[in-house]
Image (cartoon, rainbow, N blue to C red):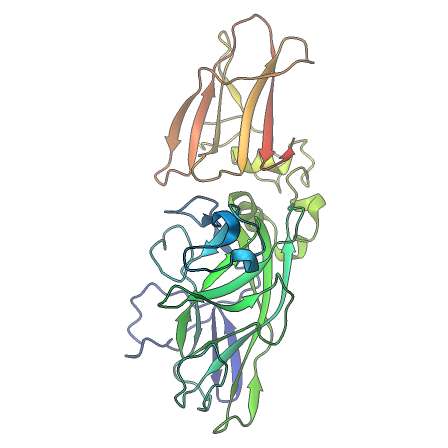
Length: 362
């Protein structure tokens, strides 16, 4: 998340960095580069336990061994939350996100007096201010957003948190390029609005403030796919993006379309095709009642659960839990083909049930 202030003009957004930028200066501050607008560029966060994903669990009692109280994240003890960590050890599956400003900037130097800052030298500080956070999802409690860092003694420094409201202390200070932990309390979509200021003159004179910029996050596999199909102007419409919604009117709710690889924006009711590796359950052996379809691997999308159920009378339904086989699809292990065998009790009805955990079922 980067801002530049050059020749009296601001630019803000995202600067992708693969670690090989030759224009980086020796102090590892951000180089001037093309900034990607954030309007339609949500950061996608996979719902998978670490390592390889963003899902964490707060300590029992919500207090860790260093005495840190996790209540500021917005959940209780022994509860899941989702984290973009300040280290880049999981860059393949979790964004490695920093707060940055261009090294060649026009911001003046001064002594920062915020007690959370340990560097009291005269430096060109830049301040990220949190203005608002909008949550869109199906959680019964609002999604909360926070930014914190861990000191060398293990103690947390809180920079931004919405669980106690947004005020003047919800800001993050940096000298060039710095990372923090970004925490989200619920699965869903987040629009995080920030602005940046610095002082153009010496000392703390001639304050200059950037335009407001919105950074967007899609937390969880289901919501990441929704963000790919629906731009932000639809995020506040659960009758469009919700798990039980059917915006394309093909009688297939979003949760099942996302699970089986179909497009919730397209009238499609295709059965499973081995060539495309997507589609609704299709008979693989009519005589034995086997069905095959694609689904997200449990390790990649733990909040999406899909079952095939059978019934001999259309009233009493039983999940097909025996005779299940799974075959990985692709190379990243996020999707798989699943085959369910019928129960062999003569003519039967079958249906697919999709659940967006913990409790929303179609």
